[in-house]
Image (cartoon, rainbow, N blue to C red):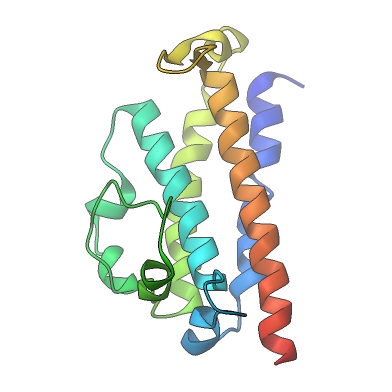
Amino acid sequence: MDVSDLLTEAYDRLPDLVRAAVDGLSPDQLRQQPGPGANSVGWLVWHLTRVQDHHVADLLDAEQIWVSGDWAGRFGLAADPDDTGYGHSPAQVAAVRPESAQALINYYGAVAARTGSFLAGLVPADLDRVIDEAWDPPVTLGVRLVSIADDDLQHVGQAAYVRGLVEAG
């Protein structure tokens, strides 16, 4: 298995996990916070998608999918390319209002498709390329791709857990 296949295998698991976390939930259920200040299913899936969209767009030196279409309007938000959810206050978490589970699935699908195209062209030497010297040690492409996958997997797992809490009432 080459590096492209390995990363593709990891990232290709995410769309099904995203769908399982949100499919069939109403807009109110997507926005329901299991406790004061807690993240909702909708916010968690929006956030993991925003992080992947933001980071992969940066790697491609391209515009984020979030700002290139009407995605923001489907979530009740402005198309701010810097808003990925990091550091959100409870009020900002509550302001993420996906119109439907399908909006989350479709936005993630668009981001995942672009990520998949990027991963398909990678060769092992690409992973050692330094992409961010602001860290010590500097961040390589390989480290960034693992970081994105790790963040997404953690948040989709949290979304699945919160879904269970929401459904249990």
